[in-house]
Length: 126
Image 1: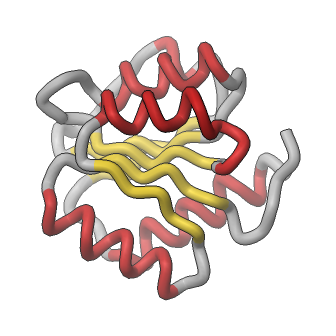
Image 2: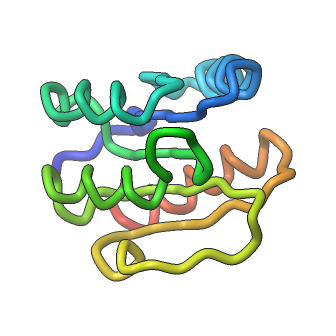
């Protein structure tokens, strides 16, 4: 996978205000962000445009399917795709941790913590 800096992010969050605020914060830091509130729509977009993003940031708890399921789907298209899963549910586990670089960021968090997690995950996998 060709990686760019700053990484191009597929960001999935079903809460509209969080999606808007965090997308804006990431863009202000220079990240290119493709934001979706629906994981199914994000996956459909990714199937056509996987070459336009380097990193997935997803919420865990969403109505149609979980962030963990989204990571699994994404990695059937692009193996070892770096991902960050955001959760307010505490510890989570799954096979997706074995299929590629994955970080878990627990809510609540500050915007800078998300930015730091993105930078750390991406730089570790250059």
